[in-house]
Each structure stands twice: as structure tokens, then as C-alpha cells.
Length: 149
Image 1 (tube, rainbow, N blue to C red):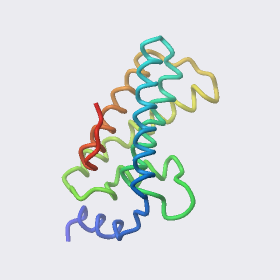
Image 2: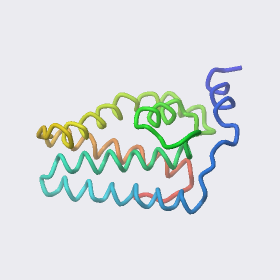
Image 3: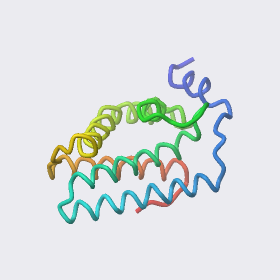
Image 4: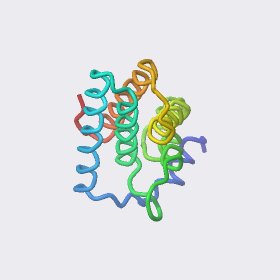
């Protein structure tokens, strides 16, 4: 069996326990964070922008993969599940998803730099965060039949 199909079957055994209400709540929050990230960017608040955009992608990835097997998602664990395509029925997305892993880690690093070390985030870094967030949320929306504009 092809690796992508094996991963899909092994990881998608009905463990997605997310209710429709929780999915809708998380998706709404993902879109709100995305809008806030854009507003912050437009007003030169680049650190705040990467923080909001990171949490937009975090909520979007959670909607995509469903609830964690135990407890709550840890940041890198959620990224790993998302980028391995353990949530999609479209194995052709796997190559694309794997390419997001480093970009997501970079956005996470920007967020921790802004939040914990008070490092100034550049306009270019913040713009990278905006672009990644739009790509991730668009991908999730299409795969899950949700709206995002």
C-alpha cells in the first residue's frame, strides 16, 4: 500500500471527536484571529500581527485534524499531525502539506519571539505570516466545506 494511504488509514480511525458546535466555534475564532492579524499589520503592529496569525493557523489546523487523542494539542504536535495529512482524504495534498511544516515552525518562532523576548518583528516577517495564514485557512476551508474569504 502507498505510504500516503497507509498514513491516512492508520491515523483516521474515527478518532475525530470534534462536535459541529466546537468546529464552528474554532473556525469562527480562526477567522477572527486572521482578521485581527490583518488589522494589526495594516497599522504597523507587526509583532501583534504574527501572534494573531499564528493563532489563526492553530485554530484552523485544529479544525482540520480534530481533537487530540488525549488532553489538548501541543503546538508542534498539532503542526506534525496537520502536515502529515492525517486529517485529509486527499493524499495528493500530502506533498503540499509537508511543505508547510517549516513555514509553520517559523511563524511559531516569530510568535514566541514577539510574545516572550519582545523582539521586533519586521514587516516582511509579518507579511509572511499573513500569507501563510491565508493559505492554511483557505486549504482547510476547501477540505472541510467551510467559508473563508
